[in-house]
Amino acid sequence: MKINTLTLFGATFLLIIASLNVKAIPAFARKTGVACSGCHTAVPSLNSFGRKFKTNGYRVAAGQLPARKFNDYLNLDKSFPIAAAFSSLPYDKSKNGETNVAAINELELFVAGSFGKNWSGFLEFAGGPGEPAGVDHGQISYAVSPKLNLQIAWGPTFWSDPYDTLTHMRRITISKSSIIGSEFGGADGPVGENRSYISANGYLTDKLYYSVGFGSQIDNAAGTDPQTTTGRIAFDITPNIMIGAFTVNGTCTIVSGSSFCQLADRDYSRSGVDFQADVNNWRFTGVYLKATDDNELATASESNKAVTGRILYAVEEDGRPVWVPYLQIDKHELFNGSESITDTSFGVIYYFDENIKGTLEYIDTAGAGSRPDDARTTFELSAYF
Image (cartoon, helix red, strand yellow):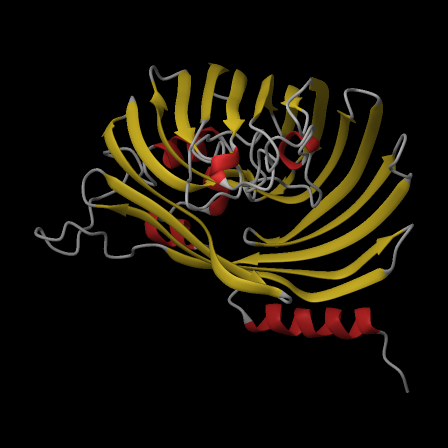
């Protein structure tokens, strides 16, 4: 008697879930006593309280929680957060490709939190089948004041940003938007990938967030010949409605040894505007980006545009999301605007509990030029402990 692979894996996963304490919550919630939904609109995307918690060095504002220290000398929280995440793709089928079953897609270990009065840090180890385990990204921050956090990091360009528009780390979709996932003209890698940098960020007022940074090209862990500057502002019209702007400008130099500029020094820029709005149980997100890159010999430049729009609705029970359907439309250009690609993603997330979810997503790709049309259906299981 043959057993369907998907059925077998599904049964195994449900047995694992059944063996867990379904009330288990991730490390930050264990430390603070605040439920996951206190910081997240829908895990892992942040709400207004979660954004302030992040930019405050993973601390709850004074007076909201009792102080808990290991001792006066070390000044270290008793429960320094350590957590893990697990993701699986029991089903992944492309119209133009093969069906995949990744029982273990990725395993992640996080160590993050505040230590001392002003310091905080975040370190993630990640790995999966066919991928060596190692440091995925990390940062250390020193809070001079709420208006000024100094940070050194190996991570996504806008990692310090507390909103969910410019980094893939807190996306709810399985697929990445072109804003964070495309190389465009290829003088620098995708904005969502890692670079070495230093930055300053914070809230100049309760409503105005900023960040400025300086660092290397994407995937240059050594930070050789850094020539990239970044800037970001975001204004909270209300605690739940934000409008913002961002820019990345730099030069990929031959000296850096980057694979993006082996023949000549290449200039590049990524600039755009974005918004994020939470209205009752709805979240609306939009990003527009213009990318300019020198060609491989730096004899001319090309310009490409991208726009992403997303809408989701959280169906709640007992104050936490249970069902979250969403729609995302992403359109971007390549080859100096001569090729346009549109990805339309429909999905629904079911939260078994606040930290355990299943996502079913269908993405339709309408390509032009060298990229063929395609469609992909994916089911992902994720758990955070």
